[in-house]
Image (cartoon, rainbow, N blue to C red; front, side, top):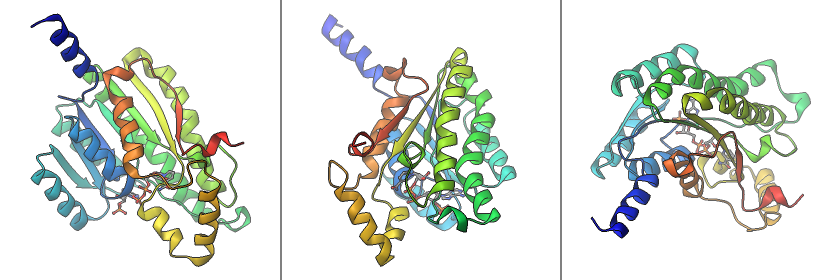
Length: 268
Ligand code: NDP
């Protein structure tokens, strides 16, 4: 091989997920769906989960027909026993080794702080934060065994800036942003890199629900008009960064919370 070809193939290996294994939670819609496709397109073998068996089966079939190496199982990530079962499944599928864990599944709830019930608080914290934290704990031995592990949390700009009517959602995402730094420092010696992506408004069913409410639709329009790029983001504008953070090319990026937000967080 001539030197130019050798250089090119070494670069290609740094920008590839060939031979890697991944678990992406909440892969049937929105951002998670785009992440599964992105990782699989770069060569990873991906397992995903959601709560709806029928939808999951249909989506898996579509991916398999495109030639993606994907599988999936039903799991409600807010359930501790189901999370344990999910990681057991992943461990047996991938021989006890995992390169990539993307903690994406999550939910939102808009209320004034004085209106949140005890149940709301434990639902949001359980689904968004506790699930991601526990899956990272469960995934740790598998990520370590792979020799090159990467965790990506999907947080939110709401966990970075103070926004109205999302205090408990913001707390669940802010907690994620902080543990990113803790886990990154603890697990760097195990060759596991931990990073977080904090998206702003992304065009998914989660945001679609808000559009169905006329009072929220107006607010959403105002929010978009204050975003420098003047539009929502698309799921593949988040998934491309997930793939990059998992590439060997990102080997020196550790403990970062990166906003994908059309410039919203820099407007002050
Ligand atoms: P969607 O509602 O469009 O998709 C969520 C996905 O997660 C679905 O596949 C859903 O499947 C699955 N899911 C939801 N709850 C659970 C659960 N308890 N257990 C397992 N799977 C679950 O959401 P988005 O794609 O918009 O959001 C993905 C992540 O991005 C979330 O963490 C969200 O907080 C974050 N985010 C989104 C933003 C946006 O503007 N869209 C902005 C900032 C952050 P099913 O319901 O069938 O289980």
